[in-house]
Image (cartoon, rainbow, N blue to C red; front, top):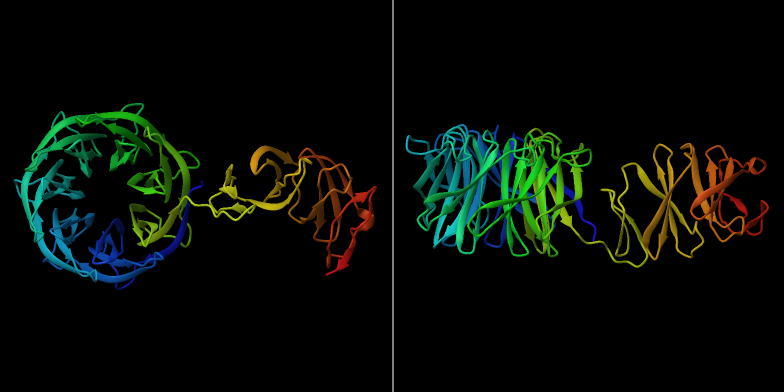
Length: 515
């Protein structure tokens, strides 16, 4: 099945919202409603939106820095449910601290705790956040970018934080400019993964029941890995194996590692930016399981876009979709990405810090099964019913269909906006071969197809804007010859009404009629 990423909504900053410099995003369910949280780095605040079943965003609350909360330059954001209450955690890179808010059923936020950096903590330049429940206790992990370290806090039932552990960078770990954190539980052991953007690497720590950290592995960039400027990290379990995904800002790519039961990492794949992918300035990562398949979503801050990969059982990545910013979407300077399922539909949320807004997408692997219907998606995917065909480059559109190779199956004529013409031979709904045909001026349009020379292969009738008619004789999907019907030149207000068999340029049932 083809994978599609369709933009269904966009929200940009205004005088009410806190989306100026929109960055990281997170989701949570409070009551029966799914909420989206977006931090605005320049606005020094956070905006909350309810997510409807159709993906529509409705603003329900906004909180700005006022001296009582720690929201000057908010960077990281995450959520957790503790003792039945949803909590929102926001880190402040400028105030070097964390604010905690309870989330009511209507999405409104109530500040319950604030922690700022001290000599004992590693919160200077607080950035990435993650949570995990271990042995009945919820822990909050915070990366301190300027302190080159990581903090562990126990979260009480009322949302207040108690520091239980800090680790600072040294010659072994990869915590220089620690920027992003993620967690996973493997064979009963909890692990913390920390990316150091200046160390160009990742450190792995086991997490004890009391929150204590023990370093178990460290991986640094080399000529194979994509860890230069290691930034976003996330994890997923695929076919029983836990994988770690690391976005590299400067290597413009993603590295994938399998995680063993003892926390050690083994590199299984690396993908770098090219002319198709949107990985320049790769920064945000998240995963989702859709129709039984695990997908990785990566934001490209410099490319102003998103790339989507299918994750195989062995952790290797296959690119399935790419979306670039346009005048409608809010992907200029895209940073944060998160997903949620609402009413059985998956939604992807991405925030752009230059566009000062957030875009909503529906990722789906479904192709409508409507018999022999030919589909062309905006991302280039082509399909006939449940037959997925090769993707096409931008600018090509389906111009006409016909049996150009005489095998009884319809084939496709593709036309580029600049005049290129290509036919695709199909057999039983599957792609067989492609034929590049001569370029045709865009003043010509295909008027129809039919077997004009009675050889069993459909041919193509071209019509010029000024009335000139041309027939292309086709055989086995390729052009054999053409006939300029100069003596059948008709005024531009006439069109071909019906097309049937033609013998020696004489129509047997191919009359034209006034439009």
